[in-house]
Amino acid sequence: MRALLLSLLSLLLLLAGCATVKPQDRALLADPIMQFDGDPLANPRVQHAIDNREGSHGGTGVSGGGCGCN
Image (cartoon, rainbow, N blue to C red; front, top):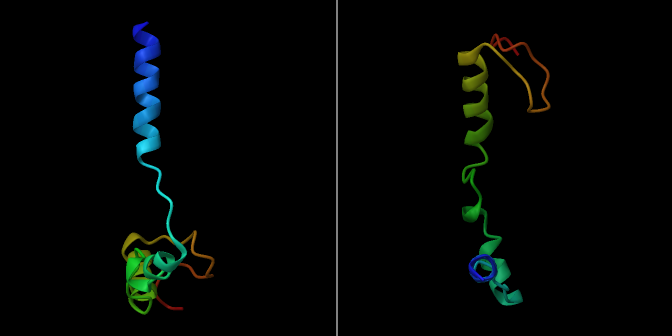
């Protein structure tokens, strides 16, 4: 009985996190400010600095050796 009650409670908690977004609200959520990388111009510069600092390169789809000469 406890296992059934616990599983039902877990299911209810999981379903409580679901939300339906209205079409008129989707434009607000698709705003570029809602993206993790808010400044698209700064992202390549930061990635280049990380590649040079770590001496490694990969996973970004750009060729180069990580030495900063490209």
